[in-house]
Length: 333
Image 1: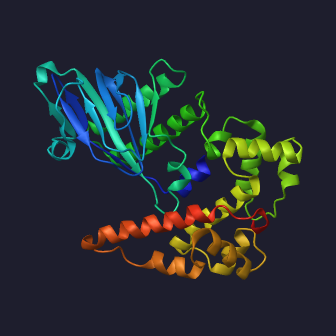
Image 2 (image 1 turned 45 degrees about the horizontal axis):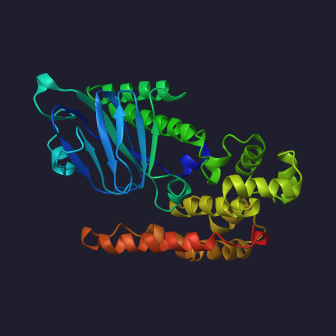
Image 3 (image 1 turned 30 degrees about the vertical axis):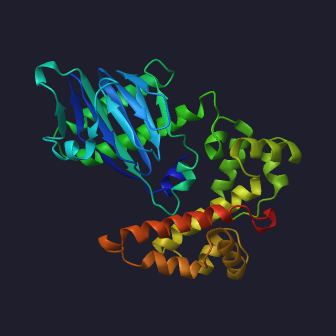
């Protein structure tokens, strides 16, 4: 988990706290990649497009993965108004709705954005909504984190943004753990967190990505036969073992090329390829461009505001290429 989250380069923004009373409802626009929050006090409804309304209570935490439009409301019959102008009017990191003497809700919410080049490592695995109730096994710990986060947002102190950022990322990790432990087991690497054998193979791959891994070696690490290991790995992770290996290698390669930390020949060796040409061939199959082309694009300055629509389209196309490219033969790993 630490490897994947580190590769995602998370950027955290904690919004103002919300204190509300009476009838109220706020409509939030879609947001990539993760929105996370919880109730310190009171109750409210979370109404996510395409889902039944969910009543949140004090101590509950929630996580939204690439959320569609959603509403937070004091009552189900309240008429929602856009959240953005309300949030923009925050004073001292606080949004207040209704008279102060009657406030009955205390909500802390923020969002976590990832590097688009590798964001799908996590966002493709998340459901639109994860809720951890205060009474769940990890609910008490998460409730404490929300309380700490809300306190940091409400005070002006040295290092406040740094503390908020770290608390939010700790909250994300605990939410992912809680999600991985729920009955409906997630897919991808999240699905292997609670599986000792498969998890051991994943840890081995992540610890030495340059090694020329074989199915036999990974099965031995998991204490399984090759056929049982291959079947269990695909069941929990969603792809065959050696296909996962190439996906992880290319995720590391995209990150290194974007940050320009290694030459292409150095990167080839670091990700387990005997030659630059073999690495370039595999990279092109997964990503849709050569390593040199990818690095050149990553070096370009951000597009001006007027071109943001085009930029988003480019990002989508890059994501589409990555998705198409993951279905490669295991001999390319």
